[in-house]
Image (tube, rainbow, N blue to C red; front, side):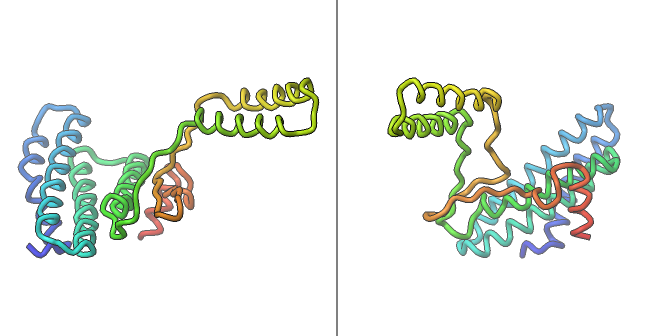
Amino acid sequence: MNYTKRELLEYFREGSEDTYEKLSISNLTNQQKTARMGNQMDFLKGEIIQQIQRTYQDNNEKVKRIFIIVYCWIVVSLERRNSLWPYNSIDLSRRSGELWETLIKVAWEYPINQDVSIFGAPSFIEVANWIQTSYKDALESAPLSEGKRDELYDKYLRVWDILGEDIKLDSDQLFETPDTKYIVDFKGSYGSNEKGNKDRLLSVA
């Protein structure tokens, strides 16, 4: 196999055909059918990616093939899901947004630049404690009376009380190079909703 788009589409379609035929005549719920089909599609994707990793030593070629694999996996996944349980417009746009993100994340799961690494977002409590401590240290060095410092710090903490204790600091992708940290929002240019997913589809079309 040369891992072309045509060959990979055929690979996924043939590899999922038996599962599709069994599920299409089963008495399972739509959710159960799509879950089992999803498992089969994931298995096929994992198998072919392992082949790629064994076949190609050049990282650039490897990543190019994996990107095409994931693209073809998405196409056939949508086909199978729609055949088993026809999409309505909202479900299709939502699923398209999820798969769009899966495709883009290939660049970080299999980076060409080996200096790229993924990092996790800090917790809001950790960040809040660090900022509050820094502010308190700054107050300590200010030419103020102890009573005035305590008053200002108490007012400052009231603002944090309004924010609460559980703000998500995570994003779609957090990664870093030796010099810089990056925060990526894949949906920022469209809006994180079904309308945004529709706009994304129209942009591709």
